[in-house]
Image (cartoon, rainbow, N blue to C red; front, side):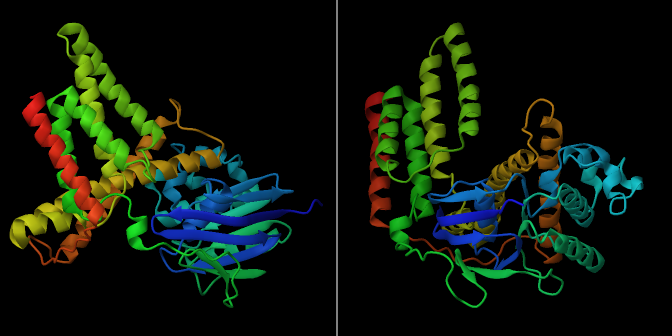
Length: 420
């Protein structure tokens, strides 16, 4: 048998203010990795699987001919409209897992299954594939005790293959060859001995990316959008502002999103230019407005809108308006996150989202948001929320935020005076 190993060589990945770091050689057997929520476990699973590329360091594989990553939420993995077809999409014959997924379930829509049933379906398919490298993100969540015991028993058969489990489970877990814990992005062994390279995190002011003060950020976007909307000259000044401010460490929106927005702007611009003229000017101005807006709000920071509205309108009216704005921005952020996870799930199966698979992908995205909205509404109802609330806004204002905002205001004023 060819020796297998997965090597995380000086792996470093920046995620907001956290640095994910690991330096370890994974060999056949079972490795358990635990850690608090937000400690970087899921991100490390994506790095080890190759779904996310590290900023520095490399992932090397030796002797590994097949691998599978199981995502934390089983809904992302759905790519077909029946359970039987979903099983086949993993390259598995439904009869091979008949004892786990009975035939009575085969004709059901996977979206109608409970999360526990979906998790059981995914794990059964993955184990039937028996890959050389298996990376599992929270595989025990939503499983009952009997299924956890069955799963652990099946994992014991993989002694000659590499299994890496990221989990919170404490009571029912498989025998492991190695145990680690994620602490603030660092991979350490369970005894506290460091197994990754320690990275010194810069001061928060040095890592701040787009306006620590949400009020100044919103004012800047409004002023720049106004300047760009007024004329080509204002749009040019706004673009120069963005070029100067965004030159260090600023990331554009996803390329596919930019392409979609480009089409939405280009089509009406061309039609307008042909019919009445001025379409090119419209396209340039709207393009600059959307570029700056998406750049400024590419990172979702919970509580930002709530702070702004309560500060401006007070707790009586501002709390409700801020909560609505907060939930709206969060839904957009989660939609992007869900779409990335769905794309990863498709790639794990060697598929991609195209005209043949767009319907199940879109249905998964829609149902995820409906379920999340329903859970949020139930939570608010249980807590007895009707209107208003108590909230003390907090803002972190840095000198460069003020300077950026002053120039944005000046651009709006110049556009009004000279270009309007």
